[in-house]
Image (cartoon, rainbow, N blue to C red; front, top):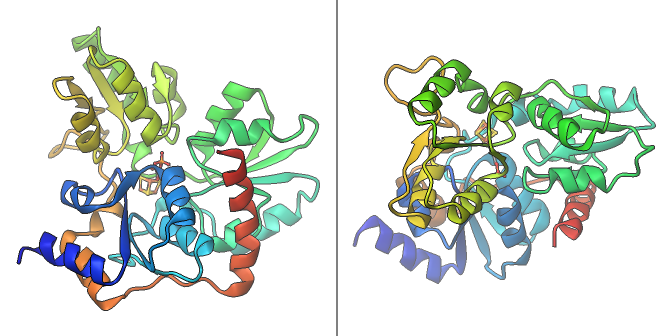
Length: 308
Ligand code: 13P
Ligand code: SF4
């Protein structure tokens, strides 16, 4: 049997579902039951009736799935699949920050640990961040963490004065504005699209800014154009499937001599082989203590209620 056949057989026997993020390797996306952005993946995790969730993504995504579906087994192919944004916000330091601003509503981007979510009033993802921020009464001051780039983008769109945590994504900060502008000069008719985790100067020159799903939908709606895509390169696989024949150019990274694009090393530690073994061995599992889970569930559910 091929590894794909073995995975499919085990999946059936164990009543498991495979959820994969757009940044996963193509062969993982191909075997997944659902491929999506952070919001779509958490919505799937909340509604599935599978007994086991194999989460082909990074740790905070699998943890969110466990918080939403505590009775299910949640496995991650490799526990090293972390996130620089989540790492930039340690719960103990964040707790002090929140305590120092007791009148603020705390909004956290889903790219953070369960402990940080437990200190939060409402969670958001890149696809609903504007809506979530706008749902907070205008006279309420806001703490936004951990992504300062997404935070700055929201401030530019809503005019809200938010207190930003100083976190960022290593992958989205790797794009070079100089190289990007040069590339656009070479293809002046192309449209630049960017993920809001990108730096301000990249976002300023983008014609569309949105989540991974939002970017795919935008390209589908303008399929006769050429695109320069400023997000992790894994998205190009699904995007190209949706718009065959449309030219998609990855935005160039700053210090990159071997590859023209940006890859998330955390996402890429997951392999098809590891996906198979975690399904077979039901390990490594993601677990969250009851105390943290109950607290973290509230802001996630608030987000889901606002995202229907
Ligand atoms: P999306 O929610 O847009 O898929 O983003 C997830 C992520 O980690 C981007 O780096
Ligand atoms: Fe985290 Fe950035 Fe990787 Fe997304 S691309 S998982 S934000 S490090």
